Image 1 (spheres, rainbow, N blue to C red):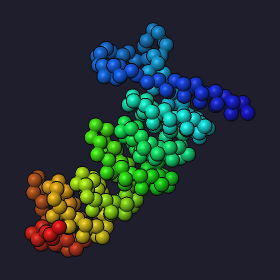
Image 2 (cartoon, helix red, strand yellow):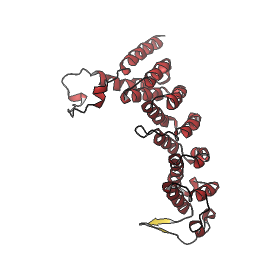
Image 3 (cartoon, rainbow, N blue to C red):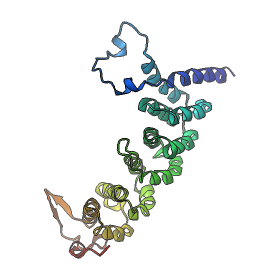
Length: 265
């Protein structure tokens, strides 16, 4: 009971501190003033922003004990106009653990751009764990996000790459034919990254998609797909030239004529 009451008091204080939000003028100003490390200051009183930033680590310590704070952290993140508060709240939710995943997923799809970005970014904490599988559909959806100031789509791509090819490649199959060129590019870029790491990361079943993309309307997609096929076919990049070593003429069924006769899209 003592532990429960103490943790409840800590959560209440943490929520009060973490809710600090800079004014618009503070968010846009760059004073250039030097901030001394905490350990060498004579005055050990934290500023409201410093106290708010340090509060998320209390949630890392409390973990699942802090789950009663999930609704309020979610609300604070959703209503924040300050990127720093949005990041603090998303981080705190991730630190609490798997029970906060539904809230992070909700923020990733229904929050303001800055909140979506941080919610997706902090989903990476679960990327290598079985509980992370539930985040895949939302991550795939986030690849369509068009915001460039807070690149939600790029954050989603990063989490998928962290998850690894066994999880990401099957999920990316439908995205490879998205009507949005930036989304297709992110998907094919994932395949390229996986193939660069290990040729066996990308199965031969992806070859038809890659070959079709050699005729894509977007030059970046064409280039990424073509180079991924070369890598899967055993070609190696020597300087700016692709070199085909001996014995790789049928690797993954990729032959030299692939690059002379791209199929029409």
